[in-house]
Length: 168
Image: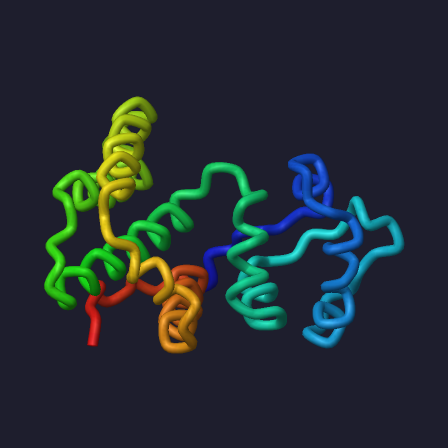
């Protein structure tokens, strides 16, 4: 069973997405079997198809135009936890505020934390990050990390329960 998160031309354009950038994706979407309507405003595409046809970078860029979506919050929390685990593995213990932000993000996605709690945790984590070393920030660009992110997002969008976050 897939968890259908739909990308809508109308919503994306309404939230500031570049029309020419969106149109640039049409050939790959058509190749993936998406019928692109003549009225672009009628275009809706599952995020899973975007991920499969255009890759993780495009899928992640598109996510910024999706309204508050619990599955994406859980995915983001997983990515953040993985970065924190990598820091710990490299001998740098992350600030407790960063760990707390991951937990509050998950709680918010599940409906057990408020928007105010999420905002406070995000702010605290931002302060903690300002004083941290940032070699982990570059790990997101590495091929292995992108593969992990792609597989993780595909797991969520396919309606599967992901394994606990680990690093190897």
